Image (cartoon, rainbow, N blue to C red; front, top):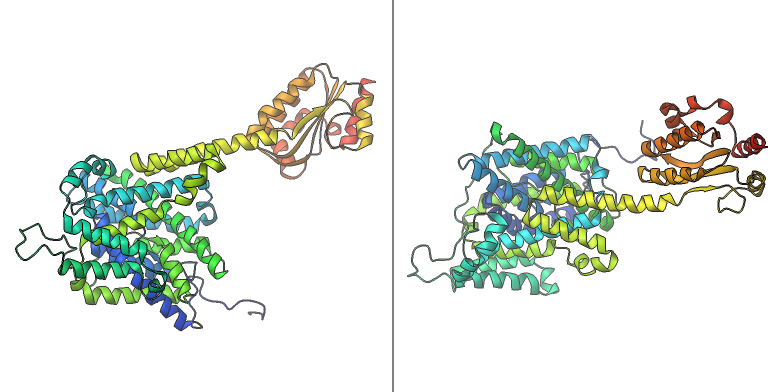
Length: 564
């Protein structure tokens, strides 16, 4: 029975869908759909999968993530980062197998969705975004730069050169030499509209839609190359988009490329998780709610799985669409569902109109997205905050753009963690102290300091405090080496909150060496997990109970008596 204090129950499978805010949710959905249209077209063309893939990715990822996700106001669709990875996947697999490359790329999208669902069921949601900000910032900025570089070809009126980023940079002189003036003008006008549209007009219509309409009209009138333009010299357009619902695409594997496909899927799935959960945090901060990370990953996974099955681009939580949805009044998953339905109706009814959209306009929109992804704010001040952090970020950017996304994140996280562990170990090592007189800086009562004085330098107290991670083992060994000619050693673990395996082994080693040298040895204060770890290690078998089951004061008294 539900008590009065409990919140209303809803099916655990579904996201929060409410009818208490229908007007706000519908208006939010319409507004988000208007923004999604030009963005999904741009990402579809940029990826190499085609405009239809971008459009249906926006519909399917958005619909299923809204239905089964864990963030009521989140809008999910193809995003800049996901498009960059998908572009690389399509290019790589198509180069390996031109005939089936695209089919394998969509299989990668399905597998990415499966990975996300698994992450959700394993309740890994809260760990996904726990990466150093320097790595996340560098990774996202690198992706932004890739998106900018890959749009240079279409921006100048030409196809994207083969070879990805390196290929485009190598071909840049040729691209500039063969630039088509009408398309460059269209792309520049698009950027001008996106950058300089007044705030008052933005409230009425999003700049992306204005740029799309204005650019298409200009391309059909003033900048169409004239009636006598030679074949192939006119403005390059999206072209015909297949009408009707997309066809089901069954998964396609090639044994020789299976490992590569799995790695690509893992990268795509992890990136989608990061992208979605970071956006969910933004949604929480605006709506003052709290999302369900694990449920959100399951919803995102289902969205990408279905999108891949029907030839759609992968997607994730989109910051722009989510913020606009919330600002327009969207509060429940009904807004995301209505957005998907509205966008689907537009796709089915107006694909003929969309075919006339110039590719240069979409390149301008995608390039602006790339500029927005770059973390300019942190780039400007990273060196002021931390030189090492700034260097990690620059390294991750360089690796992301020039080498490999996996290498960038892996190496960045590894170096950042090593530096963090070193810093923590250095700080924590200061919590490992040893004294043999009452004049030391250990925090012990005066009567125990008096006992140390009575020991006349022959009783050594080694005190450990706080979390003893593996980096502290060296400090434990250093203090143990200071034993010298003492007759008794007391290891005080009273204030230890965590004893790592490596630190526990260091304690064991110190105890064993003290015993071998004939010292009176006491280990006191261990409790909880610390005590259990030492028991499993077998340390207490090396000492009689009367040397472990006593207080620090009693151990000091026995030590003084033993040397008397």
